[in-house]
View 1 (tube, rainbow, N blue to C red):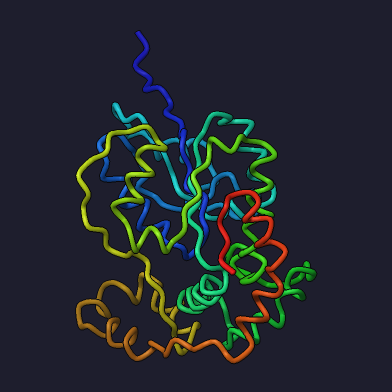
View 2 (cartoon, one colour):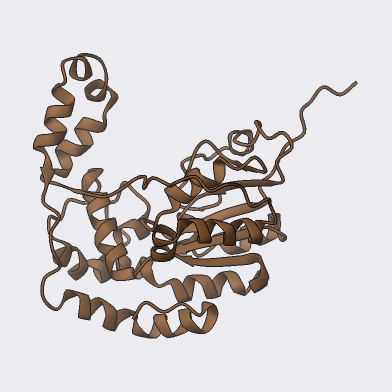
Length: 285
């Protein structure tokens, strides 16, 4: 008698984009009785140069809790920007469904910059200065990074048209649902109904959503990284409240875009926006 539990595989992916509300959407879908979403968000297993989970057994164990759910999914924003992922996913899951939640790429770029600062990855203290070195980062094989490369490329990672076009060269359009962050947060009930219809699951009673993984800025990314270390986030520092105090003291102001920055980014993304509109009917500017 075979007592081995069958391996359950995903048939649904939230591809991104980063800092567009995917954590909130993932949480909403995990509450649906017909949908199983991996407890670990962003496993990034099918990204060839940045994996949170890099072992096949560990990856598929994310879905061990599946019972009778119709939809089995995970969310990894790196799958959208990583050039090789679409081909890999098509070879393994040709019938999978995909949701893309897209945000105005200028706002998303600034939000991603603050996210990288907050987590101690980005050491440049000005958004505009980080934009100025983006091309150099792309071209330099010696660029020292401790995070996924595209998370440092604030404009390049917002070229949704190019990224989606890559996926559509492998999968038919019918396997995709394209949404915007604004419609999701402004009209969550209608948006979730659209999602349920796309996934072919029951339209359950709407539960008010809470924004998760919201952004912010820090004064020192080095201190932010130290505070994420378990030695500081637990034990004495947590019990005495010192960790919370240091987090508060390290909280910085969210910088406003300098004059001309928005226009500059929009100019760089104009051609890609045309492609995005052609492929999805979505245009941000």
